[in-house]
Image 1 (tube, rainbow, N blue to C red):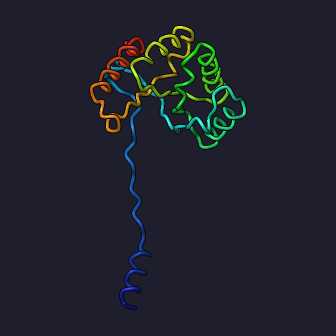
Image 2: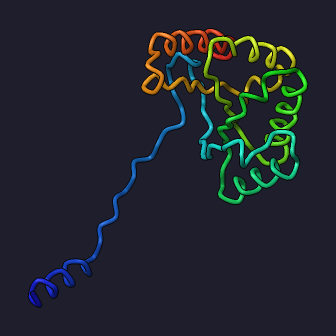
Image 3: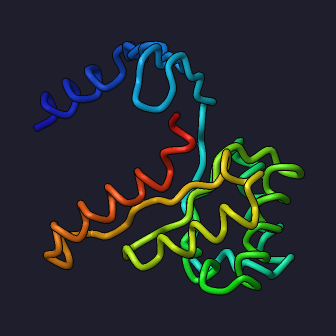
Length: 168
């Protein structure tokens, strides 16, 4: 037993070899997005409506300050309820503009779960075309939970078509 302990001690104290991660390229020379498009390096987090309340300056600022303190520049929001009315879309747009202009956020995503929500996104992009480049839907249909694989792929195709002006 003592011999095994001593052997484990010496093997655990040996010099560790650090793995060198390969450099990641940020240029995609040919893609369905844009030929020669340069994507910013993104680092961020997803939020939950209990922690990021759209329209609450204190909640928004606390989330964005935390993200900035960690070096983040993207945020995935669970804010689909912010798309239901023009007043809620205005609050979401104000949050997005603040995130971009005051906190250096480069990408904001918002969950989308049903094809009926496409019209809300169209209304958002129509009212706030300047945010189209930084705010995107993030499909969250979860067919493995709902069993609705056909609906998931329909939503993915419709979301892609809606975002096509960005991809041209």
